[in-house]
Length: 374
Image (cartoon, rainbow, N blue to C red; front, top):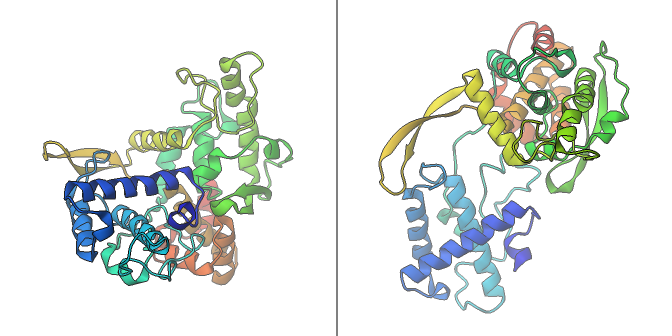
């Protein structure tokens, strides 16, 4: 059953989400006093509609169509498995074409926000998330974010504000295009083997493991390698000393020396997420979002970060495309380069995702602009 319900991912979070979806479905069936083996399409539709009208206790907002669609997909996958095992006589909720209508994960740039269905014949039950969640920072917004993080690590003084670790984490997003999981998986060893020229515009190759455990070579600008080496020798080394004498750690991004009880320990994905929220708050990149208390039903408006860590990756894609055009390359080459850097197996994934957002960085003299940003 594991391979049927979670056929494409070994992610722990994916397994947990699929399990939660099935548990919630079984609890629903128990509450309405119906055997899950006797459920029909109308029951699934009622379950879906109830979810869409409910409020998430985590966000205080209604569940998004994407979230509900993910959970409905897990249930339909389970029905397919149950029918194959002979647990269900009625095959109307299953299909042999399990992957119909589902794009390969390598082609779905927004897989983290928009999940597809698993059963072609039941697609109408799965709500579609039509919201475009690509957010690209403008030059002024990126400037504000970097100002919050402080100057480049190699140019810092004892009086410099901000966090060297946070600056590196942000730079790996907008200057390289890495996903958050790819950032926290980096080790110090490839960077220690590099010999960058601070004045050079050259790039260094770095092996990165992305979605589906696929490895790709990405370009890291020489100036960022210089900064990463400065971080390794400076703030990172200090964090390790705070952790304890003789402490060793291969992961690049570590909790800072001021971290309570976890100084010098590997930084995790939630840590990067929270850092980005603080960065947006400190840079004034916030927006007002309506939230509903799931218990009282009262609506409140709270300030929230306007951008996520993934927004840095989106920004990299658009900014790099324009930089390559400014350097004299044609559009086809620019899109292919961005595709490779981001790790998309299909060019259509890259163009379909970003083509409508390129105007954000449509600035004359973009090459000079990018140099000034860093």
